[in-house]
Amino acid sequence: MTSHSFTLPDLGEGLTEAEIVRWLVGVGDRVRVDQPVVEVETAKAAVEVPTPYAGVVTAQPVAEGDVVTVGSILIVIGDPDDVKDPANAEGTGGAGGHGDRDGLGPEAARYVEEERAGSGNVLVGYGVSTAKRRHRIPRRPTGLSTGPAPSASPPPSVSPSPSPPAPSTAGRPLVVSPVVRRLARENGVDLAALPGSGPGGLITRSDVTAAMTAQTTETAAPQRPAVPAGAPQSGGGYPRPVRERIALRGVRKAAAEVFTRSRREIPDATTWVDVDATELMRLRRELAEPVGVLALVARFVLAGLARHPVLNSRVEASGEVVVFDGVNLGIAAQTPGGLVVPVLKDAHLLSAAELHDALGRLTTTAREGGLTPSDLTGGTFTLNNYGVFGVDGSTPIVNHPETAMLGLGRILDRPWVVDGAVTARKIAQLSFAFDHRVCDGGTAASFLRFVADCVEDPRQALVSI
Figure 1 (tube, rainbow, N blue to C red):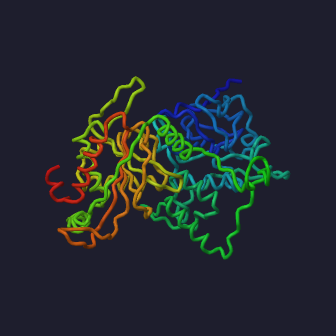
Figure 2: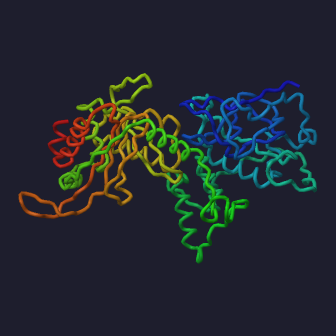
Figure 3: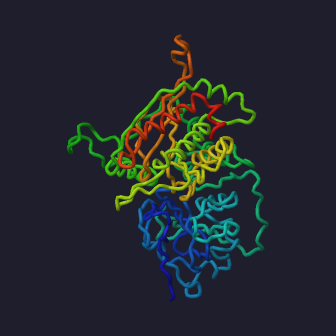
């Protein structure tokens, strides 16, 4: 029998491994070319991987939860002509037909419902057409399945009959992102009963997290999580019993590696300054079109980098400082899945209003789990608004391999001396972390002072930049 071993493809963007989140097919299922067969989560995003082969799945050596490297065998696909399909022999239709749809188990039926509502992310650059990804072949119970054992009694026979018309999607959950489906599954959120806040009723990640919060609030007496089986209760070198073990995977693992590498390789220094943002807040209220504080500060940062381009750079292993022409601006964003830094490409070409719109789209996509690997790479400078957490200052860790990051604290009323008199003003703190290899303190202070002056006199700044 002719067979093909389908391996985890090169995911691009320097990614070398992925976690198997969910199998979309099982041993014995028929698959088509470009059909998604597995959902994986990389350090950048969750994607569905399509197969380049058609045939019948004959082997599935890795299980859900396994972490595999690029080149590892995911499934083995045999020639369909060499495999006898009992379902077809009985006249009930193969795995890819419609005749056995009504006889599907609960898990397979759920997959069909999700696909009627819309498919998820595709592997970037892998050449699959989203227009053709509407009919996922559900997994059939087999002896090799990693899930619950099938019932010993045979399924009821189904008489051959014409395929019924496709049911309407009315009333079905409209979910696009596999991350959203997974989050709902793991937290017991019923997507069918959840109204979507996205376009056309699309259920977003924020909808699921809001439902999770509501469920938690309704619980009268929250129970303390049980200690995982096998965790040491005492001794073993631990000062206290182990309550939980959390594996660093996916986005969290990638962030941890960046933080560690940054601290190990970059001799960073931090400087900060308090700024009077009273005029900035007044200008924001007076503008004809809505522009957020972060977008205005981003515009000032881009102007500051034009005057101090060495801060828009990276240090090569050869010892050279590579200064970039133009800015890809990263925006640190906290999401339910962890800290991510989506990147706004060619940010230096945008006005404050355009930055406002672009940053809004990017952060919304980040919180909904819809970012692609290319959205999370290629940054040359990062802006971090930790003021949204209600804190005044921080010492940011430079986002390796960049060489600088600016942080913005919360803006609040504080006593401030103006023309010799103490008065209440809107004060914020700017924190600037930089790689001391690319510049000295004078350059860093000059950049930070420029941004601070723009914040304190934003009208003049917007005219001059």
